Length: 64
Length: 394
Ligand SMILES: Cc1cc2nc3c(=O)[nH]c(=O)nc-3n(C[C@H](O)[C@H](O)[C@H](O)COP(=O)(O)OP(=O)(O)OC[C@H]3O[C@@H](n4cnc5c(N)ncnc54)[C@H](O)[C@@H]3O)c2cc1C
Ligand code: SF4
Ligand code: SF4
Picture 1: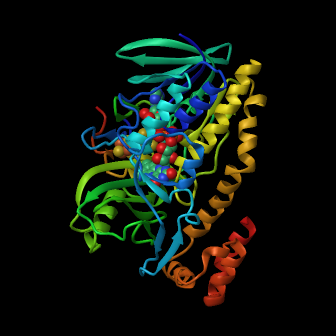
Picture 2: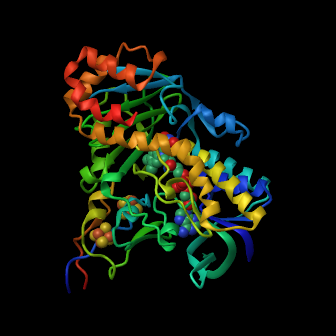
Picture 3: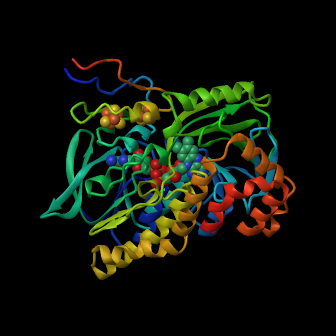
């Protein structure tokens, strides 16, 4: 349980790297051409969500 | 595998650094995550004609169009026209970056560097805290590449610096989040790169229209991440295009998302480590242009690395000669332009309109900060307090 974590919609992400460069916890990486969030590292600050130019990141899908 | 230097990233910064290091005799390997150098293009492709004087690229494919100058539009569409020489490092040519980046890489390979595409750097290898190479992964297999110097030329999303303990995280206030279409079927004044300013148009950034050839142009937007909402860049760009008579019938040939640091440059050297280009935040904080900066910094970095290999000295003291040299040139400009960026963020649309109105007939031949500010203030005296910080930054 815990707070919802950032989730990247792989179909929308265009691998611009913006979210990676602003994540204060270094919890996002580009892997095989898509941004991937390391859920353990994510502190749910929302910076990446606001930054994404194509709205590919959300908190909607809460971790199981 | 063992090299003198391993460069992570085959963008302009990586290729130019590799070339100048290899020309001085260093054994250099470039590793590139992507399967093709320069693809996908994440750029508006504007560059100053100063690039010619570096003599780094051959042929003509890398160049899409040549610009006479720039036109800057205030929110009420008052236009200020600048010649290419005065418009800065992003106006001159509009590139085909997929070819431009390949030409720069080819230059490095001709100088003796090696390149591995499809190759992701996954971490540093160290020995008692000393950096001695990078771990790479290609086609599912992991390898160690030993090297005396690791170069992080890995772009805005740089991780190499972080691995070495340098804080490369950007504040949202120091990042432009971008979207761009390459539109066909559009109308524009040939030979001019256009910039549109305004809080409603692009909060903390601008919209650009860079012509690539007959009826094709890169039309994009940068929004300051701290002023952005999810998907804001694309949404505002779509709005702008729909409302612009010359662009609204455009058909996209390409769409891209992008991110540009608009920060002050950061620490770029450690023992056995050099950062260059976007990874070192070497981007003009006003325009977000980083191509000329990557080339200028890459040359200095490559020369310094070449010297380090000759002397077999890989300590920060020697490597930071590179930063010292930039401090006299590039960094001085960036520090000043950072103040301009901060000042401009405080301008509302009314102020921008007044600025443009003061400048629309200004003779830019005699460009100096002081004469510029005089011209501005003589027409609209209320601008003076707003421009004070610029006088200090001069
Ligand atoms: C939308 C947009 C418009 C722009 N418009 C302009 C403009 O008009 N004019 C201008 O001057 N500048 C512009 N810029 C900025 C310019 O694109 C950058 O400053 C420039 O590309 C920086 O070059 P670089 O070599 O540092 O990084 P990049 O060109 O980003 O190259 C970095 C390379 O490193 C590779 N890499 C990253 N991590 C790894 C890893 N772990 N392992 C292996 N390889 C890795 C990447 O795949 C990439 O190829 C724009 C940027 C954007 C996003
Ligand atoms: S900011 Fe958005 S488009 Fe860019 S890499 Fe992150 S998720 Fe992908
Ligand atoms: S929500 Fe914050 S911590 Fe989590 S991935 Fe996004 S930027 Fe990083």
